[in-house]
Length: 366
Length: 246
Ligand SMILES: Nc1ncnc2c1ncn2[C@@H]1O[C@H](COP(=O)(O)OP(=O)(O)OP(=O)(O)O)[C@@H](O)[C@H]1O
Ligand SMILES: [Mg+2]
Image 1 (cartoon, protein in one colour):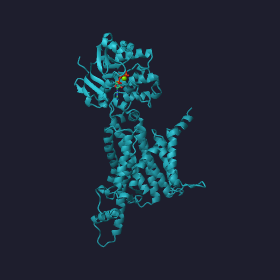
Image 2 (image 1 turned 135 degrees about the vertical axis):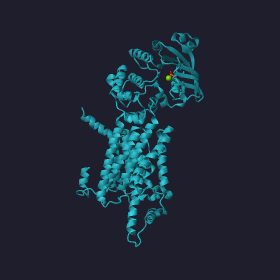
Image 3 (image 1 turned 90 degrees about the vertical axis):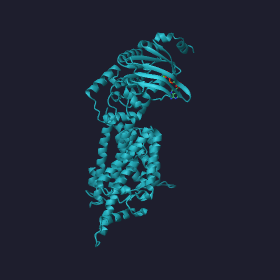
Image 4 (image 1 turned 90 degrees about the horizontal axis):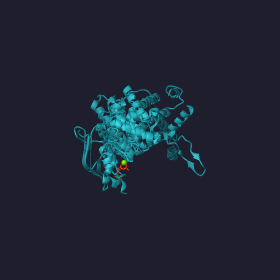
């Protein structure tokens, strides 16, 4: 962590570019989401293929504030040298016009009601994923939807959400999404400093989440949750309200994802409905599977390794391989490589990359 | 003595096949009862109905002093009301240590918040040690349940049943896979438990049933064929026919 700060452009030698700092910061946020995925799937046995939706929602919630505050500042600056000072209503109107003209609207949609308050927006980052997970989980678990049916249901949820957001009249700017999120209103620090700050904030969030998750699974709660994963009916016959436990894990992990998204998208700069397409949640599960589910560090390793490799291969930095008769372009071939890796890990290392850590540790202890 | 559990006129069918047919049964507290019957007689299904796993088509299942109907309660609620069960196939949490298996079973508040704040008290530890001693797993407390032998898993599940401290214990084929000494130990244990609680034991082994020295209920094709002492039911012509006639 310190190394990266020292090498950064703002605080050190500049060996690490701003954009790479952002990639690292965003990777930490993805690790946070993977940690949540590991809790819900690896520990509780709920293969949710919708947790990236909660990540996206977190991003949208903070994005509304970022965009409102930023646009308002710009509007104020533009209107400042008018002879008659603009009223607050005029500023609000002009801001709305600026934000929503891309979708042919000019009024504030109801969703943006609290977008002028940082505090309330941060509250929504936690509340909206939490409440959505609560309602969805309550309906699903109460009807005892499990296994592949639950996975399909969560895919349907994230698909429905992204289709909803794609519409222009939803209020979140349709497929334009929210942009300019990298500009932090009221801050004069440049991107060089901001990128390091966000990197540290992401690291702190991941660290706290890790400690929290480790505490969650270490005690009796963890025992019961793993028991539910392995034999749900048996836990019921011991008198435990299984649904309440599953719901608790589902909601807690949804909130973790929301927080991860709220830190991710200011670094990404833009969020649009594509981000919460069903495939994103599947990737999340793949990371955890490759990293090794049922162990917290496995999820973090998996997400870090795969997403960094992914941004290397799809970022155009990996050199094409010329085979003479065919040119391997990594942008096209990365998904194939990832799929192959997934199959190999599943077949030959069911405990994932995290299992390798176990092997090393065991070898050291006689 | 009023009944602790009263099952009356219960029937259940699977795809038209009547697994339980107008079955009535009652047990008081304390009492020990053996349930015997040929394969497929409906013994396990009978326990499924009491514990809420299977819902009967008709009939009544009443519980406790207030005669509460178990049919409206969930599996977890029934378990919390004081009905514990050992399954025919031993089911323990293989991924966890023997100690954790017992800890999860231990009678304590069952909600998520209680579990989050749960501490192993001295009393808990003493109780776990006591049970481990009883089931012969004291030396294996920190081993994974998955690597235990079949018989040891059987014992662990009995231990989990004891840890729940239920009023009624439903024990499905406890002696399967046990050595002669272990069987003797199991009968002693069950008889001690039955001094204060209600115990229903399903068993095929007649020697085992004889050692329990209790009232016997014979099930056949989903209904009660005969009831009484072991000698009484074994003298019953219909029982002889069912057991020997094929
Ligand atoms: N879920 C089910 N679906 C269909 N048939 C079932 C189901 N459960 C039980 N049965 C049938 O009901 C009958 C009674 O089964 P049950 O398991 O209760 O017998 P049992 O007396 O416990 O036999 P055993 O001594 O072999 O354990 C059997 O014929 C069985 O095939
Ligand atoms: Mg049976």
